[in-house]
Length: 311
Length: 67
Image 1 (cartoon, chains in turn blue, orange):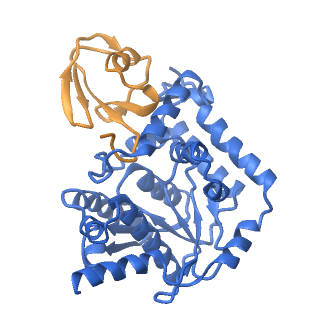
Image 2: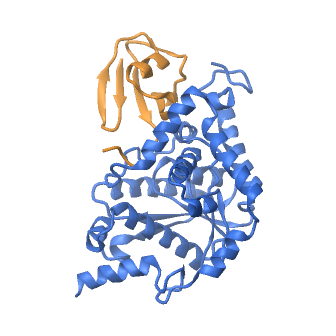
Image 3: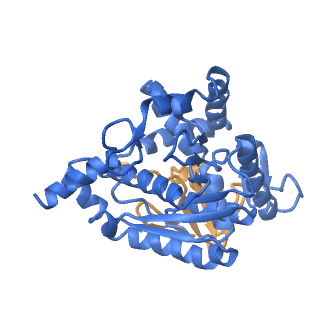
């Protein structure tokens, strides 16, 4: 297989682009796709301070790597969820990346440790409030991520969501006709009101396999093992189904997701989401973060855990 | 050839020579969901693996695990 650009030996084939690339040309391709996303969706500029949510997995570390390589001002935030036998491993990957790649480029790693701040690991918290672990994990991560971005004055938050993630999420939303979620799904969520930071997904044009290849080729040591708490996940089923379609018909995922984004843009007014948020959300009585209820779901959950711990 | 797999981590022995795409087909693995790594390098679908080779077939899809 020959590189489409320079004709030397290819290291990866990309059927959806009818192309193959050698390592340097592939790196250029990945960087181009990220820049296209950043510019096309007006995610951020070279002056903005970006906070990247890093988990130790390939997507978030690859994202941080790409942003730093392209010269953006990107710091990382790692949330240690206190999962026995897993968090220590993922944390170690993140810290090693910060040490070898981020710090030499003057980037900072922030760490939030759930057992310290929330008082217990997510498994214990989930048991205490009688909710699925994934639900508790999501609430804590989103809350802490947003709060860190706002408190430390970052202009934008970035997550490593890729084309496979977005297409699978879209499939799930369509299968269940979740119109509210469909309205909000996209690569760029505005800072619709005070207390919310802008949130972007710069990797949305790249497939999961392409990102894994980028990580391997650039010697980014990431955690391959899956989170032991996430069993029976629907997302994995949707991804599997989409990848079977992709194998038969390369380009399926991008036609599906990018096609949806085009239609979404055509059918909705640009500021309608911000306007709706402003109408429905106000500061939480406990922490001041935006919520549609009296107390936000994070504070409600933490209050419940505290009551159960000290009745 | 020695083939390292994940989810769960295990090693299998496969007779070479064999093209990468043939190996994936035999192991019932979707190319779109995997990378084939030999040493420090990625190996493309059309490459032929020899008996002496040691490769890792790494799953790239994350998002939990099926029960």
